[in-house]
Image 1 (cartoon, helix red, strand yellow):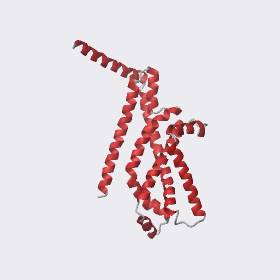
Image 2 (cartoon, one colour):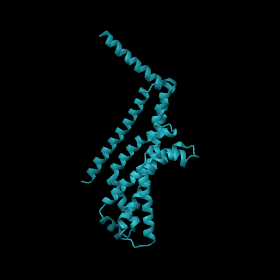
Image 3 (cartoon, rainbow, N blue to C red):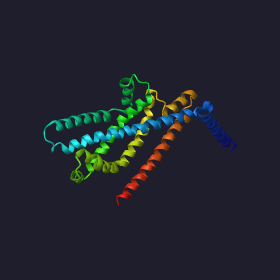
Image 4 (cartoon, helix red, strand yellow):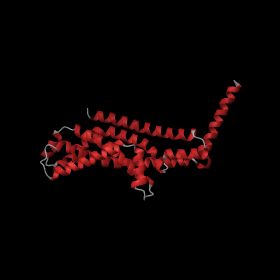
Length: 249
């Protein structure tokens, strides 16, 4: 029993020493704190870009599907067809290539002359998220009863006004839980930001590991923080879905 007690005591002492080495000495915990701030910043602004871009692409795609047969041949139909083709190419490329590759292309090729890593990451993840948000919102638009379009026309709205004031708000309510889940996925996807030298949460843990040569504690801390964040937002999504169901009754 004394040997077992001694072993447990030594294990706790080693754990304490490992914690002090990785987080307390030289204030290394600040790598985690600063990294978490950058991760949340990139995720927040990338989500805004993704939603805005997704709405535009979703409107183009759904409008083409709904109006293709109704529109007469002419300039308007040609423009819509061109925009739809561009949107389809965008969706195919973004959804068909890895996020980390898109990030590296943005940093090393497209914005090679810029040193603002945070802005580049926001744009890269925002453009990536926009492709998935577009399909989510498009599914919501296509699920709206066609009678809503007729109701908008009867109120004197044109097609664009009907989409903005009547259809899009209803579609958002339908797909809001899915959009919230996309936000959660985006938080985890930003963990590859370290590939372009951005000191996000994951990179912060990796810097500590490189300084202390101890992988267990910093990587476990990073994983735990991501888990807490995801659990928090998952709980919010659950509450949101419950309220949406109650509001429909």
